[in-house]
Length: 136
Image 1 (spheres, one colour):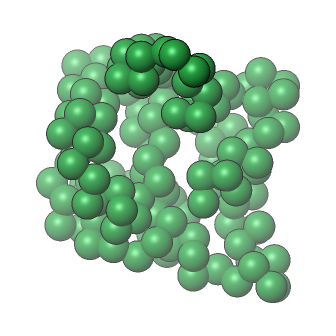
Image 2 (cartoon, rainbow, N blue to C red):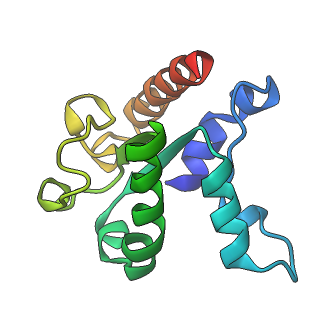
């Protein structure tokens, strides 16, 4: 899902509307934890791709979400969750009160690839991200 999301934002990135950071940008020999912390410190918006794996990850819960939500409270960092696969996100204290994407909090996986509905939902999410990025 991350690859599809990044691909959808490629035009925005090329036009320098967004700079999509992901852990794949960490260079060989670079300290990965420091690189992640630096990216979280410098970002204007955090996009969360929410799935059962996201909910289950101790690192995400203990390190990343804690840091991002501290910035959200202290600095107003925008945290934009996207449901990519159905999970019990409604039970997560830091997530349950946030507005989710896609519209109506329907998981991306529920939109058919064959009919183009998944591409459409990614495009809709991309337009939302673009609008937010232009206001930041």
